[in-house]
Image (cartoon, rainbow, N blue to C red; front, top):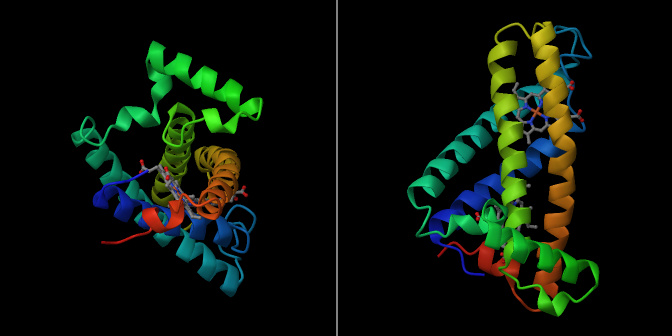
Length: 192
Ligand code: HEM
Ligand code: HEM
């Protein structure tokens, strides 16, 4: 599928920041486990980078949502949420059935199923950014953990499971579509 240049540029920033966040979260120290002040210097540095790259992701998502709402019709954003209309939900159900039954030739590359998955990925990233953005404010300046900060971390961790699943599934699908000759990666990561 052909995406407009603004969507491709937004996607590059989104893919870089979100992938960085997921990977760095495996190695950083969390203020929750370290009572605020006792993080190791390496783990603390990685956490600081998680905070700042996270804020960049918040910005990228915010600009992305404004762009999508302003250009909703022109960029055909309804393709990301086909289940919002009755006709879209019916198409989605039939594509899911075809997918489960391995009739993959009948699942269109730009159809309701692909759109839904992309839409859910965008929602997962937005949930990470919202909870992360709130955590940034709550933790400033001393990384103090209150019950509401704790709750926000639980939510942030909860959504991260979906974000990981999306990164694996989406990344593998992208490689698959590159491999079978659709050139998905080269089209999506093209700058010009
Ligand atoms: C984890 C962060 C990521 C998110 C949230 C994300 C989200 C999206 C979204 C929403 C779309 C649909 C285009 C749009 O409407 O903007 C898309 C398309 C695409 N993404 Fe990602 N993406 C991520 C990471 C990646 C990575 C790491 C790769 C490369 C391995 C990748 C490869 C692609 C490709 C090839 C397409 C085009 C699919 C098509 O032909 O329809 N994405 N992505
Ligand atoms: C969209 C951007 C972000 C993504 C994708 C992301 C992703 C993640 C992931 C995957 C984890 C590990 C969760 C776990 O394994 O339980 C994590 C933990 C954490 N993140 Fe983020 N994050 C983002 C933004 C932020 C921001 C802006 C902050 C600001 C303070 C933040 C603060 C934290 C904290 C405090 C933890 C540790 C939570 C805990 O101990 O349970 N994140 N993040």
